[in-house]
Length: 200
Image (cartoon, rainbow, N blue to C red; front, top):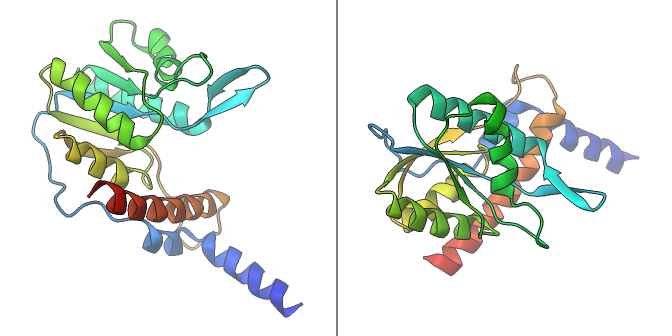
């Protein structure tokens, strides 16, 4: 019984936004304000399988929406990044569908070969170089951004992070969203360690 009480207390603490913020991977110390980003880059999350097809997750729609809003605000081209599995529509193309109704005149670029964050950075860097772009606004979830920033920096792209997710408020109120972000933060710490070992 005492074990269940302890587990419940741990889950309760983990669902407090004020606690979760301490476990977030920090942004790199070298991140600085960029003047005049030349493009917005939106990184695709994992897709969801529905019957025989794929669709964007809620995180994918959220990232796409934030990226489109920023690109339209600053009148910048937008690059959606994310490959495809089993010959289906890529993450990039699924996100780009959100642009058609909202901003038909947008300049949209697609990167459809990558299957993970490091590959996204490498493929995007090559595509951006072709377009003469070195400074970007990089859109992803808050927990994912530090690793993404590291990957893009390693490929010579200067990025300003822009989070598509925020911790729920108030900080003292338990939230399933905060608990989900805590699990994401744990995964990102492990992934950052792996990147440090493999790509340094």
